[in-house]
Amino acid sequence: MRVLSILLTLLLISCGGKDDPGCFVSDVSFTNLESAYSCENTKNLMEIDLQETFTLIQTQAEFDAQITGACMPEIDFTIYTLIIGKKALSNGNTSISYDYTNDCATDINTLTVTFNQNETDVAPNLTYHILSPKLEESTTVEVITNTSTI
Image (tube, rainbow, N blue to C red):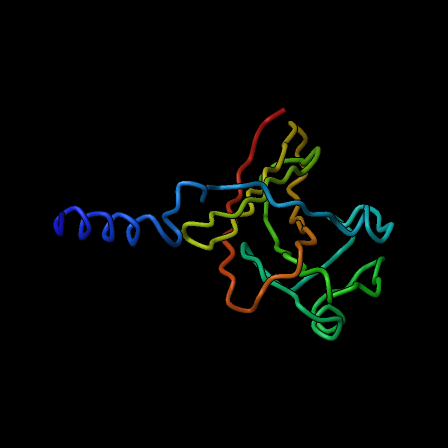
């Protein structure tokens, strides 16, 4: 009986926490500056001094210091974190699509950015972004960029 009690205790300990069977990768809702603040063509008209990387912007002061372009809204950073980056491409771009997930087992948010390319000879250096629900300073974000030919 004592062995059964010890096994039951070990089972309960091992099932708690982040390895909980109810813990899985889930989609995270997000928006963008076009939808939330009526900005237009941010992939071409918004600039940030980055090359092939991304950053998180948590305040209006950070936004104003790092971003330039045609649309400079007052973003509600009490509810949003801006995830923004740059990507150089070898040919024209038709659109950008996004997938944003959270893995509760690792506490990592993953943003997958897919650049839907066309055959034109334009070689753009595009800005991509999402407005994520407000992230804690300790949240880890990974960004994966892909290209797809349409």
